[in-house]
Image (cartoon, rainbow, N blue to C red; front, side):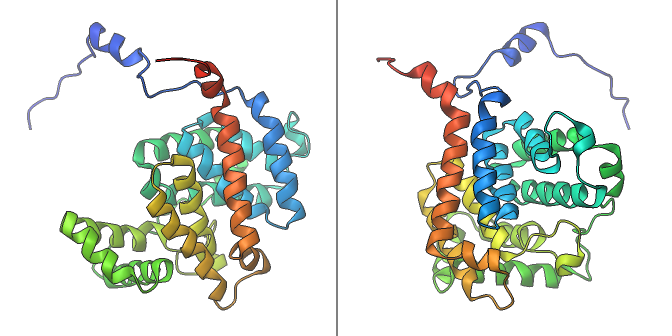
Length: 286
């Protein structure tokens, strides 16, 4: 193999890289988000929907690429005094929260792409305390092998059927007509990443079927411009009400009140994060 020499990015290219693109915007400081985060968290606790709040808030900020907010959310829910690290909950509770957050970010890769997923995951990891990092799962559970490939594909197909219901076959044909590999990729990714891992709550950070739809709804609602896809996943969340063995939180989420709360809370968080952009462009005329 030929020797690969180290190279540097030319100065002119570095200059271009550091310039802001027209699509970027300045996010507000965390202090400006504290009020909306605290009020929505309190509301979620009153509704016994803290896990749902954690998932949708994590996905909202990951979609916005507000990396600092990811760590802020972790500290907010693990400490009784945000500014005092000694008030953090025990390592088991903090590990559960961190595991659920990173699983939500991972599942979001299908809706927000790898770059934002990687940056959000790195930001969360940098925030975690050493004892939590040590307690998090280290071994992968999503390695594809000849022995499990059939089961992974089955999970992907089953999840698609569960989310979309009867129209799934029409959707498969339509997506496949756009590119013959796209529908195969989506269903493989559904089975490998989006579907709950086998093992249920015994698997650290595992998110059940209701929270799978919550990840999709929060990401797509925040992203905007994808209303048809969003409607499909809202229906997928509503369909989880028929799942046997669901908990009271999941049952409430799958009802009209729960879905309204998901959309309204996601909107409130995204609006607060985007406020600086809106204020900076207000009154601008073309």
